[in-house]
Length: 122
Image (cartoon, rainbow, N blue to C red; front, side):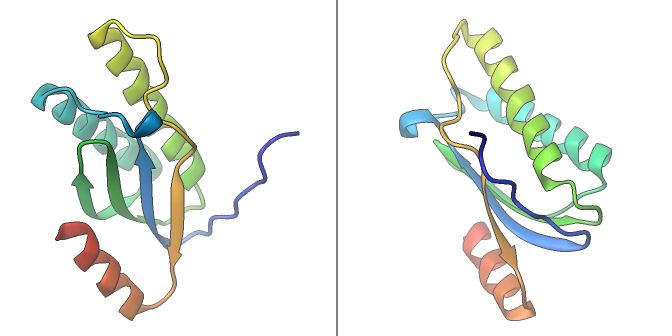
């Protein structure tokens, strides 16, 4: 049986995160971070996302994303998939880069948005 479908809405705000497999690092060096940001920018343009905040930690990342269209799953598939394929190619690996599928928490009020933005940037 497949994973349950998650509903994402047009005009939604989300706190999104993905962690490295077994909490391993997802960026080996500064070049990996640049590659990730480049892929994120392509995904942002392709899906019309507005990125309000981003934080790249050693073994995970956080984003605050506004989705004018209900396409968070498609964009995350492209972001994590493209990055993982490139990471494995650059580092000669075949393992999973990311553990579980991405986590997304809907942001449902201005107060929650302010708290989430503060958390992500600090």
